[in-house]
Amino acid sequence: MASVRIREAQEGDCGHILRLIRELAEYEKLSDQVKISEEALRADGFGENPFYHCLVAEILAPGEPQEPCVVGYGLYCFVYSTWKGRAIYLEDIYVMPAYRGQGIGSKIIKKVAEVALDQGCSQFRLAVLDWNKGAMDLYKALGAQDLTEAEGWHSFCFHREALRELAGR
Image (cartoon, rainbow, N blue to C red; front, side):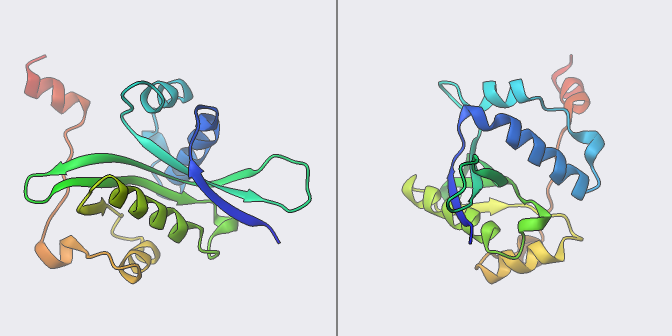
């Protein structure tokens, strides 16, 4: 039986990460919104001051000489709560459909929780589309609180054109 390893992504994983980002976007019916490149992932995640951090999930087949297969990822960054201090935000979590139901997503989430605690974070935040009931059920089963239900929070985003307008450019 194959085993799963969750590890910090390395620069050489950027091609796999981009492949999985595209699969996630297709799953979420938002493929047209993926504008990131492998080069940007390298530059933004593996420099002196990375903008993001990433974990990858690999399947290791026992006794086989082939390379491990990257089947999932969790991309996160550190944020700051003015009420609670240090926090971690999981931007994406994705496991290829053929590997779901094996606990890989839970392992990625648990590893992010370990990173959060190691870095002194008091919160671990993430967002999910309102139709993804399976993900919401998983997060709740792992102990997450739905802030939309509990506190009425809604997420907003200023995209590039709105940013330019706000900045007067």
